[in-house]
Length: 154
Image (tube, rainbow, N blue to C red; front, top):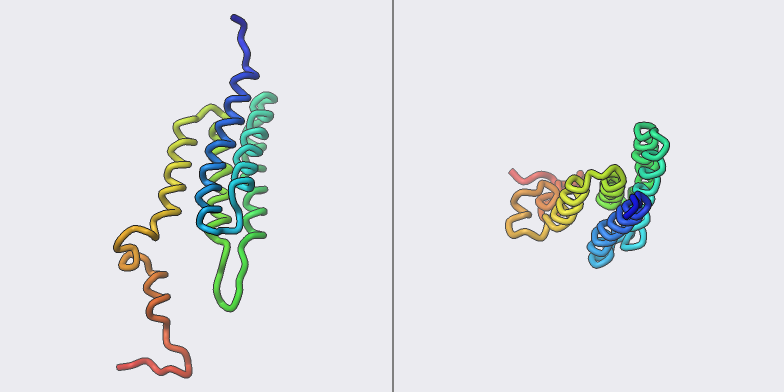
């Protein structure tokens, strides 16, 4: 049997698309802006660029470019409306999803799988019982800070 490195590369691309799709499914299932296709594309793209960079021996600059590029995409997702910031979690998870694809490209499968599992867990943290006691943001929503029109009660 001959050595077929291209078959390994195809497997890596498929695995990155699968893991990105699982993360995207969670986001789409929860009604968020970016979903399955977006997360799959980010993970797959990072993996493909990583494979190309590995074949030419320039992983450092390509990896830095991916981190910067996905960060730039994420910056476009973050919005501020009526004093409220939206899209921050989506931007952060897209950025982290790129690391899943890049890890797979470089053959660091354990890192990619653990990162994907942790991303899914992080996205579900707010559903844990007692989360409102832990999260500062949850407490702020329940008990908003007094405005100038509402004096603090003593």
